[in-house]
Image (cartoon, rainbow, N blue to C red; front, side, top):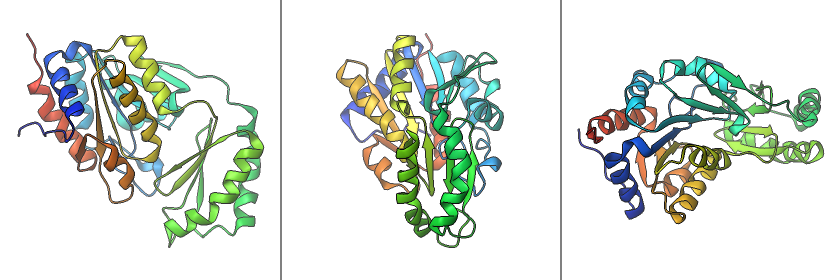
Length: 273
């Protein structure tokens, strides 16, 4: 199978650079919806079959392989089997946490997180949340999921205003996603995490793959890096739930299966001499 063709000139330039100078490339990926299929219960998420093996094969050939996720870093490592990928860097909680070489570094969460944890059930009750709405506690953030409800989109719309009000009162940021709204510490996002890692590694090219609205700051970062002379490629792990990401991407593949397929054809295309 041949490599797919990006639909933009900037994306084509970046892919050519990654292929010709892989030792300077940073390949970064979201986890849920990109490396792992979206499931009704996030605790059941696991990496798509074979995708971690492809990352492990790619890692020795490129400068850096990274995962940037809203999940706790250690959870992504566990659910993805990412400790099998040599030298991988996992940035969790949108970059607040870092897992590398078996070591986890994480700051204390701001006090607003504890307030939200205590008050969120009552906020949902007062809002009349649909049956099946549930809270995921990520430690540094809390997420409200509606995927299990009878009408997931309507259930999410019902909660947008009360959750935004709670976030404002507690000094947290609102992160919308695929049938989920997350309340998390402000000042961190996947774009800042990606820019920081590119600067740290001195990367000469970058690929970022994601599927959800929380990945758009990373797409913005890729565009900024292009302006600074670092070729960048944005990849959407496509779905029928979030069109905005596909519209922004240089390359769209068919979900986590498509991401695994892209990695499989990218590896033999890299210059090794």
